[in-house]
Amino acid sequence: MNNFTVVILAGGRGKRMNSTLPKALCDLLGQVLIYYPLKEVLKLKRYLKEIIVVVGYKAEIVEAEVKKSFPNETKIRFAYQEKMLGTANALEIACKKINSDNVLVLCTDTPLIRFQTLKNFISSFLAKKLVCSILTAELKGDNSLGVILRDKKGRVRGIKEKISFNSKAIREVTSGEVNSGIYCFKNKTLKENLSKINKSNRKKEYFLTDIVEILYNNQEKLSTYSLDREDEILGINNQKDLWKVNKLMRLKVLETLVTRGIKVIDPDTTFIEEGVKIGKNTTIYPFTFVEKGAIIGTNCSLGPFVRIRGNSSIGDGAQVGNFLEINRTQIGKKVRVKHFGYLGDARIADRVNIGAGTVIANYDGKVKHKTNIGEGAFIGSDTVLVAPIKIGKGAVTGAGSVVIKSVKSNTVVVGVPAKPLKKSACR
Image (cartoon, rainbow, N blue to C red):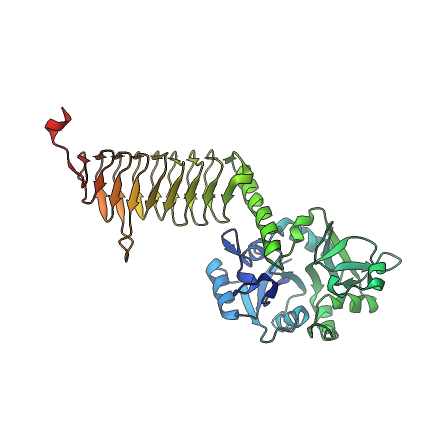
């Protein structure tokens, strides 16, 4: 069954995004746009022979980003579209590298598509023995997707792009069924007909959608596979589209976390990027922001009002928040950091208590310095730790201390600058 080549069209510039980056590299919840369709198609192991990513505009940085996101994936190859001549031209270039029986085509800007949908789509295509199948959905409201045209017998006869609508075209449309830009093809038929597509008079490009009318006129066997979840095919053409899809993707990520045993108090005010790992029984309070790459343990409490940056980790049973930023910091088990502060470039051992208002001054204007806090240490409220510094196991800092030198284990320091507290002063 692994006789499908997946082609992802990622060569476009995306002018309407008003960005200096190719559309494929637009940020969506901490990942580049192309990451999402690639992640889903890589799950098609039963069918998947290889993936060809067609790159064009700023091809070298798109290719580099894909390799960075999937560093050990050997099934991904690249094809290069030197001139931006449209989707049909891009696919024709990819076809020169394809030797499988079937082709699944996706665009880089459909990040909400799910593996299960693609699996069902392929299964339907094979079961019906089609030469072409189009993934479609009924969309309400304004959208820029092409509309499916059918003949009197209900057979698919073409796709009409909305940018080319006139009064006659509007009369031809009988429903809101739209094209997702996702197709299955028999490779042989695809190669035989791509060259028959004519260049658009308006945009001077070759549109893949035109192949549907060609196949219909050739009386080839083609059909559609209609989706119930129309949000999966929402595309991104501008920043407003990106905003809408970002919200849906954010909820999708939270939905996945909830099914794994994480408690999210308010999804509308919780922001977890794709690629964050969170253990079971952890509770996430409102206005919590967690960036990709962060690792959160089990039975933790996050927030409210906490930002956990990438390359940070929170150990099992830790409590972090309110009004707190954690940056490039590893926090051990059962640590308590419950009231406003900044922890940066630090390693904090188990069972440490960080008092309210604690700040790690990790930057001297040139270099970010490290801080190590030993097991069971107690950092008093409003302490400033001036890195590089080590706080020993069981050490204590008094409230308001400015610690500029390392503190030995089981030692109490107080003052500005902080100095060891004499035993007589403790009586």
